[in-house]
Length: 97
Image (cartoon, rainbow, N blue to C red; front, side, top):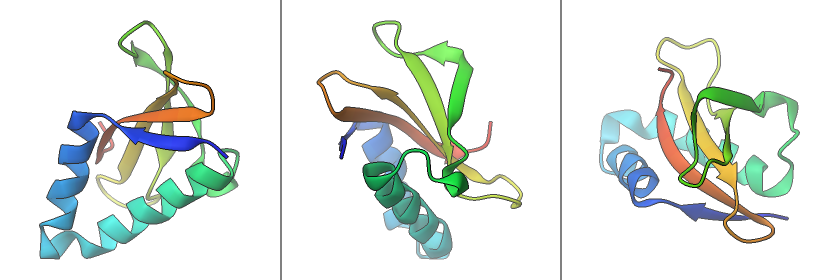
């Protein structure tokens, strides 16, 4: 099982959800997706795929996982493998760009 590591940006994104009572539903969806990412990155509801618009800090491939679907401005989790073995770095938790 991979370990999740949050960048400062991702921590800030998640804290904004935690601190906004109107975003409880979104926070629950994000937490569920993060739990699935720890246990099964290939889970169909994550719809994980490469996101080619940008790369990680050292040129890593960045992937997108769905926290929500069929929702206006659905939240996505952007991540890459590393920097250590069995580690996933979460770089952003944001509405679909």
